[in-house]
Structure formats: structure tokens, C-alpha cells
Figure 1: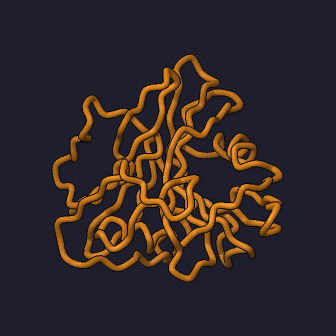
Figure 2: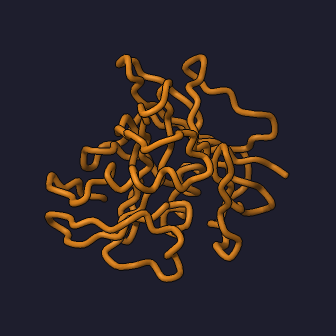
Length: 217
């Protein structure tokens, strides 16, 4: 169970994202982002060592607000071979120095994401200890999954991140989020699994959208 500490972070997560987001091909802004955290959820690391967060941020720097899904992991030491995925380092008021990574390149996050899709893990509230997040939905219509081999790296494009998945499937993370027109995001043809969630729009209303979709070949 992840413990949510009420303490300081220097720099803050949003300060790290302000400098990191423009380096991503799926970031649609033209200048310096103005990110605000508007939603997301956490997953527990069974070993209790790695913090796992799926953060939704809204960037209000452009003419229209843009919403992004940012999976992050927080570690107490550098992750071997993942320098390319480092978002930055922070000083945590309780835990000391923390290394923040793009979670799409962290095997702990990927293993727990598969467990969530299969129903073996439960999404947790972003800011409250030991509290399930009931707004997160998931599905999987297939046999058991195993975590992907990170020897085949995640790849980014203008819409999101593609992850090599087991049994010939492909997991696509929607990094540039689009609100669904109704309460139940429509799965695309060929989808055999999904994760969906909610976030708050600038006008104060709640919106839902697909975070991740598992596709057959």
C-alpha cells in the first residue's frame, strides 16, 4: 500500500513537467507549458519501493486547454539503463532524493498496469492513502497477460505511446487526452482491453476518456 505523505517537493512535479513536456512528440503546445494537475490515479508496487502515478495535467498556455496523461514512477535510486526516461530529480521532505521517470519505461509500472487491465490490481486514489479510485474502469477479454519485454522499447508519436504487449497485442497509451462525448468512452474496433478515467475540466465539470487501449494484431 502506497503511503501519501503530506510534505514538500523541490522542485515540484509540475515544475519538472514544465521543462519536460515540450520534449515529447505528443505535446501540442508551442511555448512553455502551464500545467495544472486535474486528475489521475495511483497503483501500488507490491514490493513497496516504487511510487506509481498516472497523472492527468491540463496545459492552459495555448488558445485552448490541452489535457495530457503522464505516467510517472518515483524511485529512491536511479533506474539502471533508463537515463533516457528520466523526467528529473526532486527532494522529498520525508523520503529524501527521488528520481522521477516516464513510467512507460519502468518495468514496475508496466507490470502493475497489466495487472490493472486484467483485474488483478486496483486503481488507488491519487491523494488519499488506501482508498480505491472508483472512477477508473478497466476491461480485458482474453487470456492471462505477462509484462512486456523492455528490450523492445516504448515509442512515442504525436498522439501517444505504443508499448509492445504480450501475445502479439499492442498497448497504446493516449497521452493527448480527448474527452468522451458521453459517460462511457467507446472502445475502438479490435480492442481487447482498456483503462479509462476522469479528470476535471477548466469549467469545473468532470470529463472521462480512454487512458489506454489494448489492441489485437
